[in-house]
Amino acid sequence: MELQPLPKTFAATREALHRVAEQIVAPARKPHNEIALAVTPGGFGTPPFDFEGKRMQVRCEGAELVRQVDGEERRAVLVTLADAAELIGPALFPDGAPDDREPLGIDAVAADRLADFYACGNEALERFRDDLPPDAAASEINLWPEHFDVAIEAGAEGAGQRANYGASPGDDDHPEPYVYVGPWTARPEGAFWNATAFPGAELGYADLLAAPDPVAATLEFFDARAQALTV
Image (tube, rainbow, N blue to C red):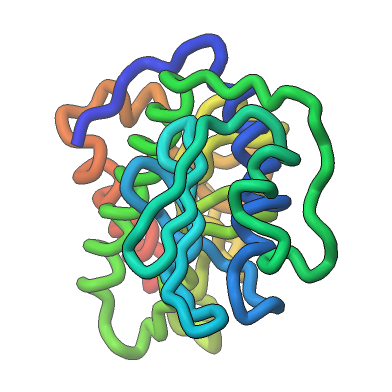
């Protein structure tokens, strides 16, 4: 796994793809009240789901939207939300399809950098989750469309050890991606817990970019904070 420097178009592309996740990809998932997404090859999307007797998936691969039905794909470059909705089809939008025709302005290189970051975070979370003891009661790995991060919950809640472990592509307080640990109730102190926008710890994109193995660096970051919460 190798990360690359971010282009100047990254923040704008991230925000555009965030809109696609919330208004196109998540609404397409069945059952209708399920919104959790997943990291998929080249980006993010729904897990495969059954609809009207067919096996379907909706996902973003780089700057393209992909609709897969029983193994056959239709894809198109993401231009507007309205165009994206037309590719998916009205049946998957029971509350009405988006009709916004404002250009999304997605840069393909920036979209690929976002996909690389998600893949890095997802792999680290998989390894971290696999090594946790059963009493950590780790959740499934989900990509949440509201915050656009990929994350799990883990740790004994009664002992004050439960926390969110995740990878965010950036937000209002972080112009670049970062990985984080956010304890639910514990408020640990010290340099180990360096986040400023929330109680917890964070590791920025520059540190991951400089690491020989960003997946290993992320896993080490998760492991160390999980261990600190048990002390």
